[in-house]
Length: 232
Length: 337
Image (tube, rainbow over all chains, first blue to last red; front, side):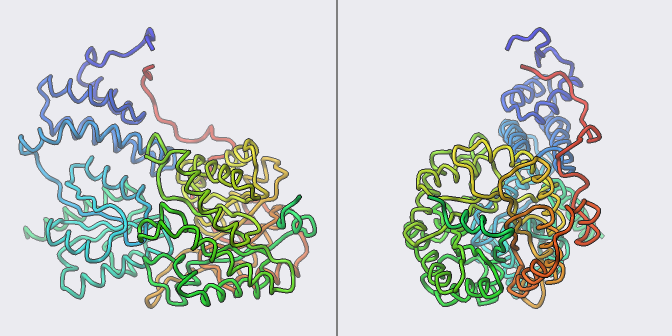
């Protein structure tokens, strides 16, 4: 639509463009996000700055409104898709420029559970926050989780379940990790609609994360703590 | 020709539905991650015991062990070729128990979500979802189902697809959604929006309502939301028996039979015609609910204050209905066309 007050992204100042990109992420406008990312890169921004100041900051607003019950899953999925499109441009550039890394996560929905909406949101928000994420998808057996831990050596294992009938399987995975003496090598985060904090503790996870925004905050805290321990 | 549920509703003020399926089957040794529907063939006596437990506790309606019996979900276990068989037998076992009850008992064919996300966010299309549900429902018809019972739905698109499948199969149906995110469904549907959607369907359900979600208080708030739209359609409440806790290797829900009895009476007083439980609701809860519904006289429609006093607080300040002028709003820049 050729509205009179149509905004031309390339005519905006850097500050205005970044704010506009926050709005466009909020509205899930994929093409506008791609355009914005390309403009900032062309103006000489580092890929890391584009990631953190435009995309991650924008997704933080989306995450907060999701947490507060202002946005719901459909809007967040659209926003995450727009962010993914921006990330697709940035990813190779980030690798080239050796941008700092937050940490690595292996994530998957447990055996028998097909529901992966929440898990996908967590994966996308974690990527948006600068983590490297390996998504194992749905229906993961304990063997599959252990193989991925062995191969990827992540900082964090994330497990998700949406059904009463599948959530006890998280304990099966954690118990197996304990048996093999692997439990202390990883930060284990769990989530899913029927879960709660007490349940997370009872099965031996490090934390229960209520939603994707909380998962990112929790992951950052635990990774910082882990690094502090290693250093001192 | 009217269906068995409509007939029974016409003769009674309220009907009691059943409680949990998964929680009960776990207690019989189902292991986590395994599809409960396979037990319809492999452990039929356990399924009979499940159904009989609800009937013996006073349920007028029970749901079949077919919640995940659609091709999209059974595919996880390489059982997508067994949809018709698993649903037919799951219902036929129920038919056997209901017909031996000595009073009218409704066999309701449980249809749960596909687990897929609809277009444009996901890949599921309306046509595919209708086909998936239709296959499952045809299996249930072969088993002698009284009514189809669509449950735990979050997306309006999925609710509509299930409705269309029931229309194609020519069967009466009920449908409940799960309101677990700040008083709305995961996809953002409010109680008022659901009531409106239901009336716009070409084949509206016999009854509609809410199941699962976050404990009994939230579910009652959703029910009040339905009632305040002035709907004349029978309402369904199937709330969880509290919140899941982990004890000695198994899941236990913290809602007592006394709490669920209180919830059942409040639901009836709010105008709900079909009252049952969901996750964690065992036969002892159902017995207490039935006894309370029969013994206690009908009271006035409860307020939110009464509900939180008797059942506990709510999980969020608002449920997205009514006056939203006080809600937080984000300062927006100009939106582009």
